[in-house]
Image (cartoon, rainbow, N blue to C red):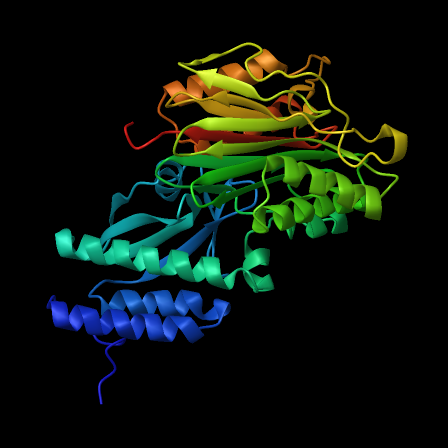
Amino acid sequence: MSDPLREPSTHGPAVEESLLEQLIAEAQTALPVELPALADRCASALGLGTALIYLADLQQRLLLPLDEALESLPVDRSSAGWAYRTVSPRVDDADDGLIVWMPLVDGAERLGVLAVRATSLDGPLMRRIRMLAHLFAMLLTSKRAYSDWLAARTRTASMRLPTEMLRAFLPPRTIGSSRCVSTAVLEPAYDIAGDAFDHSVVKNVLHTMILDGMGHDLIAGLTTSVAMAAARNARRSGGALADIVCSVDQALAQWLPDHFSTGVLCRLDAETGVLQWVNCGHPPPLLIRDERVLSGALDSPPQPPLGLAGPLAPAARQIHETKLEPGDCVLLYTDGVVEARDADGAEFGLDRFTEFIIHSNAAGQRPAEVLRLLIHAILDYQRNQLRDDATILLFEWRPRSQ
């Protein structure tokens, strides 16, 4: 009997449905290391040429092939990188036909690109390439949760133990829906310890959080990991923002009474645009509207850091509230961002930080690309040697009327 995964397909809907069923069935049981060969076979079955999978490294500078025999591609200076940066397909001429670079995206999270060779290209073939990219984005997302091999393929350096522990708790860099998107970056990628971010969607509510734990060691990472676990536990129990911050305070005071973390926790109703936030000893969030920072819009009276116990513990946390306008962006950051210094000792500074984001937004860059470019600019400013962790989280509200 013939194997439909090894024979080029015709364009009939019944054949296409049968192929899709076969592809999904085999993909479910494929090991992560088998994905490159499976992608190639799937492309052939769909009437295409070879297919290659590239994943973005942790710092989003390179696109690393899952086929370990191939060379990596630069994100900033390649057709593959253009497809990744813009989340748009790109078609290049090749010696024996065409190469289609199709972005691999899971929801709002950019994973990498799929490179597919074809002798020619038309609407049905382009749809098949897009379908293949959707399938492998889902496969990569599901399998990377348990595959050390996939995790290793996105690294270009050795990772310290505190960073390994903390990264195990981090969510995807970017999440979102049609109404809002949240994206984050943090550096140094292989040597973080005290900084962390978290974001999650609960029905129509976006929860975000940024943390800066005391110190730069394993205990600092443990502090922020416990804080994230406590926040998630309260969210998953249906807690309001006050319950979430209370849960974090209690968990740190109970399990790590000699350690604390500064942080900002936010809750955005994506239907109404109502934003609630609480600032626990951290730099205040920034509100960007109409390409300018609204000075002091999200300032609030100072509150103690998270996790203080005994007489230092706050009696009650103050929850603040405002109403966003469509297109508003809220920016959370740790002090390592603005305190980065150049060779002459000059700080990167808040003005340079916000101007970069405003100009990139005005140029039409997607939020995830804005932060990718910004964190690289900060690293370059300090000659790739950060004195402190630098973490940035940006979320944007765009209701359906936008």
